[in-house]
Image 1 (cartoon, rainbow, N blue to C red):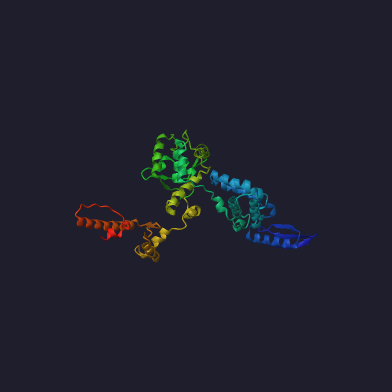
Image 2 (image 1 turned 135 degrees about the vertical axis):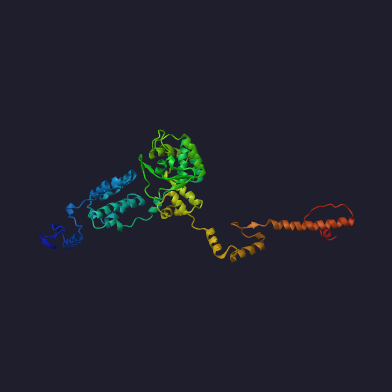
Length: 434
């Protein structure tokens, strides 16, 4: 039983919740009271109603989610990632707002505010994803009826901002490795020639290298001094090694510091190497000495993928080598590097259907035109090739005529032959027609 009545100039809501407890609320206008009561009755009918005084704020829900879900189940790097989103983005705006008061319009206001403050679209979209995870946790525990983030359209153009990748050329790679210290070159070569992630390289053990098949088996990753299993099944993979890398690793194994963990790239004391120390002591100094701009270590992984694409490797092979969960991830990340046109593929398709001996009308026209102009038709990508043989043929005919003329004169005069090759175009009519 619920009703609205006016008392002392205010409108009073009188209703019972799903547990049979009676509640009163005050509104300024009748319309506001009717809208409020209608919303409350829907929530009571679904069993999700929670009195306003007992409704938690976004900060309370987010902190509970962080402590109960993120910290126990996520890796340290991911924990820091979510903590950054909460402290620097979400809590300053949504922190004191009741969780059930967060709707689509409020989220859109947040996005517009952050955009006006100079925050990139990619960062805003990532924080919205984190917000959606918190709101989904609230739905699961009956704090709200639906997740408003599911109705939010992400900011467009963020893909270009997120894809600020730097790809090294082969010349830059050689420059980087040559300017690195000798004991650091195997690590950099491994990064460039395998595309392994930072934690996968630092967690690599000698037992993970298959010398017979020239492959590296990715079985773990190192983060903050702890070893973890790869996140996905696709991350557990076998990566083919170039002969140059095989030789470099074999030489490195002879002088590698001994490690109780059997690590390929330990510290001088044999302990697991910290990622930040690796960047500070190995990667960035090599960049400075080589004169290259400062890039991320992860860009070496992008460089590996770009070089495979450039040399024409199949996207499925690239996906397996990179450890992507699906080929869609590979194409979405590196599809812009692939050639948009491929005449050779279209040509092969035509030959498969009609045969290689079939000549198109365009090819016939080119051959006829070439015969008239004294040029050979285009062959295997060459536009025009001059027929020098035709010129030699004409010169040979001219000299042959001169030879017969001199032989005839020699026979008639009974003198020794004296050969003198001249261009027939310079002979007089008297010399030719004796």
